[in-house]
Length: 402
Image 1 (cartoon, rainbow, N blue to C red):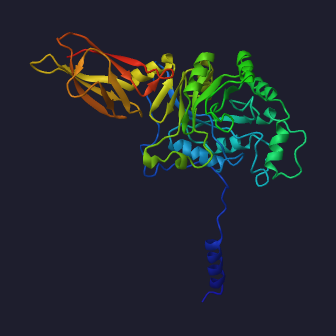
Image 2: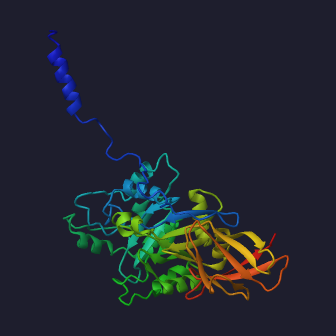
Image 3: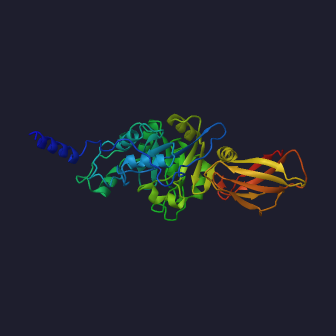
């Protein structure tokens, strides 16, 4: 027997039981799991790219409960084009366990995890104050450290509330100005949040109005997490603010929006000239957004109408033989289940005035125009779309029977 065999065997065993070196985080991997249809999908519209964006989320670098890499993997599963992790600058409940004097760490970790994918990771932070400022997000920033200042931090890093109070001493106007100095897109978070607005009714404070008048606030969340605010929508429309929908997720995305139940995170559909960070930023400053919340599409007519026209199209239009009735198949190219109401004088043979078209599906209907013609115009109200509180847009389909 070779006297070296026991040594070789021992070495082989050591190799088997010794953990192989690995990077602690690394790049994100995507496994759609049992829900391959979960990516959020809407068609491009009016010559622009429809990009799916979430501009408000959290990680362990503030009060979230997952590492930034997990946020990236969730975003890839949901088919997002862009993600911003906007950790609180001043509220730091994990500071004793995860000390990080550099507030850019969440972005850096997320950007590294997204390498090799098509996901655009946007640098952002949440300026976290009591009213009158409330919570304000700044995205497309260069350095998060310039957006907060704590002159006398508490000796105990676990003293979360003491740290938060110490951070309140720096005026919120200074933080917002610092963000604007970096060219940031800045927006009001959850203005209906009951912890700061017990009524649940969104309002602007005099400070908000002053910052808007100075051109330092550019957007407002009309859908955050599980809530939609009609009052926030009205404020956004009245003050020319970009309309936004965000997840504001702190736990796992699947816990808040379980795909098994067919749910999805609220997102902003950004109509951009190009699929780049610069394209998204330009579109946000131009107000080219539509909010996707549950089964609602929320936006101004200039952005919402082209998206509806691209999403819902009529095909296979023909006269039913020996009749004056018209067969039309509506094809839905989007994730929305369109809830429609016939508001034209054309009657429907199989349905009353209300009907729906399933997401990425089709529905064939028979219209009764009363007489044959080369062109028939059919107008429907899109009841799951909103252009203002309690206001639904209409869509006119030009039907040319063959």
